[in-house]
Image (cartoon, rainbow, N blue to C red; front, side, top):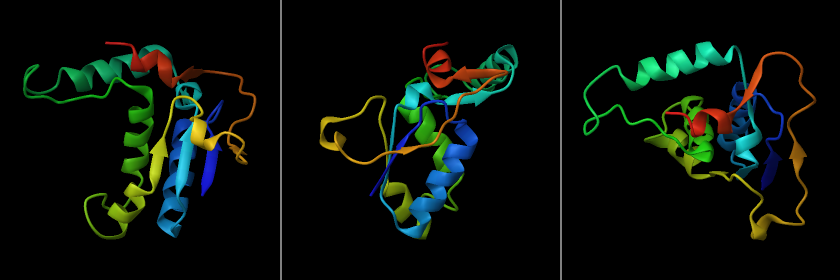
Length: 132
């Protein structure tokens, strides 16, 4: 079982690593999902999110977009898997867990630090999780 600390990790790079480890058969837990970084200009990311949100249907039909940061991260990881509905993609999908904080059952375990000190245009996932 691998426990990955997502503090200051870039979302896409972390997601591809987690997906690859889950496809190998490892059980992967990602903690501190709120502190994972999304690279790019904040206004541009907000505009893309808003366009997705208002694209089809209405409030009852969708598209349903996630507003909780650990589920946002898990959704990005799902996009890196081959087919999350069947076969080896489904098996890998079930082995991935995401948490905003460190849960009690994982305290004292050895963690892998995924992030480094970042400079430039980076935004945390929690900024977009609360945004509507």
